[in-house]
Length: 230
Length: 146
Image (cartoon, chains in turn yellow, orange):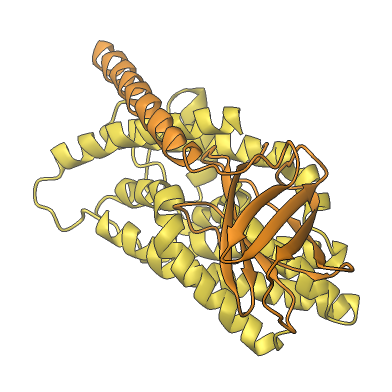
């Protein structure tokens, strides 16, 4: 059995390699969508808040599976929620795409002064009316529930480490810590992708945004199809 | 408004056109690699002069379910003090380290518990790499039910 310190390092490095090898393809569209919607605004704080929320959910899940000592008990119960989150994410990306191109009168959905019109935009308006990038935190918490193979694998290890920890309290803390390390490891890759999609430096962005918007609609649609088939 | 509807419809159409061939080719590519039907029963692979048999129960093999893995060695075995282990993953996709530690189950058999996770991409081809310390590795590529 590996020492706790070694396990933490292993989870951190696994998160890092998975980030570049897996998350970019699977979760990249989400962070890219956020980046594009922020337009010329800084992506740093929104992205960090999003990742904080996402890692927060991983930590909670890590604690729960470690306490339960099993991943399968938990996944059997959150399967439907995950499907719902995946559909929500697809719809969100599509709406962000429509808003980015100005085809839906939402303006910039997150962190900007929009004048919501219509029932959909009012719903989002309630979410964003705080005029704060803080909205990315609950968004990260929710999207942390997205079904993801490597997260499941990390949770399997967290459940195992929790069982071997000696006490429930220690097991829960270990599970939470391991998932925090895993989540932190995935941040650099996703942040890099978000930064690459940050077009704020471009002088003429209209065409880029229109292309980005169409791609977001496509990606959102793919997310929904995958969710239905999940 | 017409412009919006047109672009939206076009985007959906492109998405469908992009998805269908992608899914078919990806599915075909990995399904062609399958060398074992674990839903039907144990599978056997050769590792130099040793025969490695892998059995996963309960069958059919489903993701996110507690599974029992059993490895049986026969033939000219390499004497090793260490038990074999299984690494579960997907061909062509890094799913993170997922190792099933095996313990002696009497004779030349080793058993352990594990879980195959679920990939939202929809790909169902999984790989179990059985490592026999001192002898090498052999791969079982199989379908998993989601």
